[in-house]
Length: 199
Image (tube, rainbow, N blue to C red):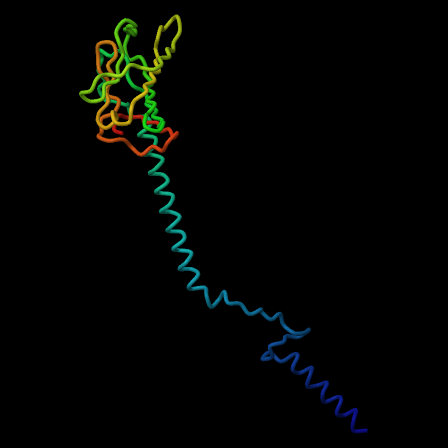
């Protein structure tokens, strides 16, 4: 008859432990044990990383914004601040394409006054003090109402004649195509567009 008594005492102990507030297991079964994680231990270090990443992102956004502003300002600035009025046209942009030891220099002109283009007067691209170069091709744009309001000039220029300023003589004036010394790096068969004469 001793076995039942032993059984009841074990039952009481189990019930008491289950209802004991100091027990890690509340009444009704074992508690939901939180799984072990390295996140809490690394929380301080991760917060520093988040701050660094946030600062770096802000820095990239600022650089991107400044680059966009600089590109927009460069694009909308005039090619030449005070173009010669006697030229009757102003330069909008210049495209340069490398072809081995030569350059194709395409100059886009837009009408700047009321007077039209004089077809009788020669057009020349003048490299410094050297002899002027005739255009290899000329394209006119416009309408019957406005006349010729755009001109595209294409010059075939040897590389050794591009080191230095380039001026465009048209009508009775002179426009500055390039004002710097030397040539910017342009690979063979590559093309670059310039929206000011400082190249």
